[in-house]
Amino acid sequence: MIIRKTRPDELDLLMKMYEHARLFMAGHGNPAQWGQSYPKQTLIADDINSGCSYVCEEHGQIIATFYYKEGPDDTYRRIYSGDWLNQRPYGVVHRITSDGTVKGAASFCLNWAFEQCGNLKIDTHKDNRIMQHLLDKNGFTYCGIIYTDDGSERMAYQKAE
Image (cartoon, rainbow, N blue to C red; front, side, top):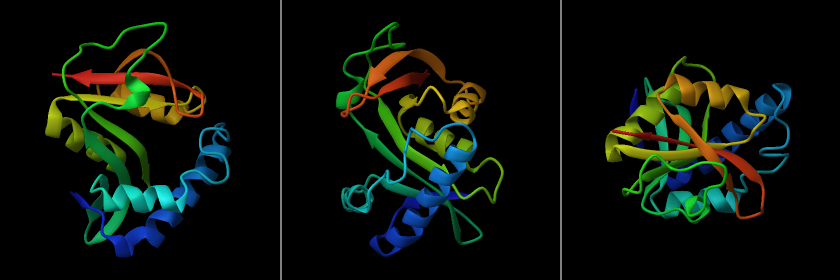
């Protein structure tokens, strides 16, 4: 597997992957996290244009996608019912999904992101048991609660060297 930046001509494929992810989450007890329309196409286009959208390929096929950026994330400025592991500079991963065709793709993406910065933060919905298991399996520590821009509560995780 390889990780590379997303190209603008891949937007439609990513949107299909996110549609599949919403259906998967809804079918596995997590219908609220992304609802019926998150992420919007304009958001993913902005991610691509900013250079923060990445894809994971296997044999030339895109099998996963995610947002990765180093630097402060406004949603992580305050944490409740816990503390971050440290206050060092960090990277963030958002909107990670895979098409489900290659086992371990999401773990590969998370490990790649961690290798870039050595201090990684991520969050997920309380009903997203699959993501919680993935984070636990990949050495992330549950740190507390954060709130997204729209006020939604999320479980916050961090992995540090």
